[in-house]
Amino acid sequence: MNAPAASAPLRRSSLFSLSLALFCLLSISVSAAFAQPKNPVPPIAPLDPNVAEQEARALVANLLGQKPAANTTNTGTLILTSRQSDKRQVQLRFDVVATATNWQNVYETISTNGLPAGEKLTVIHTDNQPNEYVLESTTPGATNRTVKSLAGNAAMIPFAGSDFWLADLGLEFLHWPKQRLLKHHQMSHSTICDELESINPQSAPGAYVKVISYIAVESGGIVEAQAYDAKDNLLKQFVPKKFEKVNGQWQVKEVRMENPRERSKSLLHFDPEP
Image (cartoon, rainbow, N blue to C red):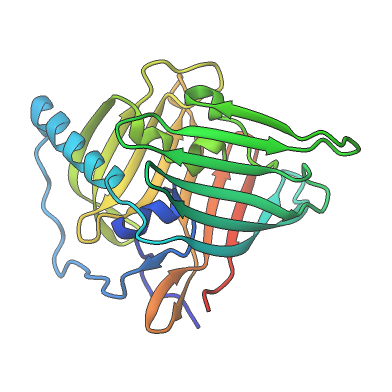
């Protein structure tokens, strides 16, 4: 089944499936109604700074307020391409777990094929609290399993050797205190979006300093996200890609994370839902 002509946004109701992206990743469905503007969108005047912050806070609160209604499980393949065009693959399992006090995204490698063995990431989401990232891993040849609890900049490390950082899988940028709506009605991937700027107030060397994300006006989903360093260089770009129609609904088939600095990219390919 071919994808729709226009790139489809991730819906707000499915943000917990991403965790994003990000950027973002479990059983994500997208709307089949891709409304396109009949006329060019007129230029929009810059927003008043106070209004921009107020609207950004409301937008982010709405995004973070989405929670899973039930536990779900899915599988997929992580495909890594390096600057030498070498490709590696690893099978993944994804779980969404709702509890009485929080909800969790669990990402676990099934088969590593040369990637770091036995990695399992649990992103713990609690209302009005920072994300907690629990990373479990086993070093090849070792018998002991290492468990680390991470937060903030410390979570900006690769998952399973990919271009997806732990923080990407938790949409960490939405938890930063400084949020500002830059523009209304910007076009991104043939979708009318609001442009959101998220600033990391305590960035560390190599970490994201700023993320620009495009939020679909109609569905409220993330269409694209771009992460920058302290010199305003593009570090990462997250884009949902291929789509497939299953049981009358469009589902994300593939999500791409590009790393221009390393000239690498990671594709997360989802198995179709039954």
